[in-house]
Image 1 (tube, rainbow, N blue to C red):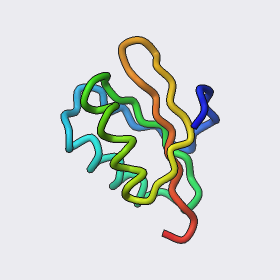
Image 2: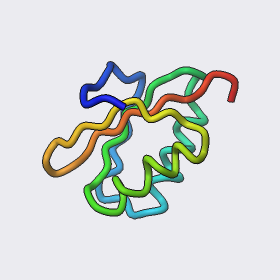
Image 3: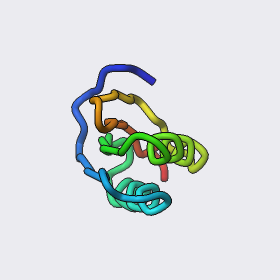
Image 4: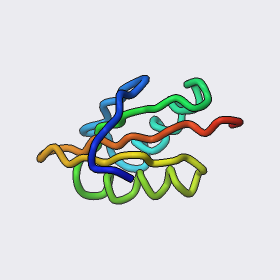
Length: 83
């Protein structure tokens, strides 16, 4: 996982969205995207950034980047090819 972000195929702003709804919405968006596509998700500090990345990895997604923008986090996750 890097500290710099690539150009995402889509962005999803989930600031203000509580757990586990933010994970569910992220996973649903990833499932709608093309295999290999990159999604950037904006998450609040605290529970969202602590829970969502780990939950995505457990669900089989690859977290490729995470940047702290003081106030929110930008998380980049890629939909695997073949799912």
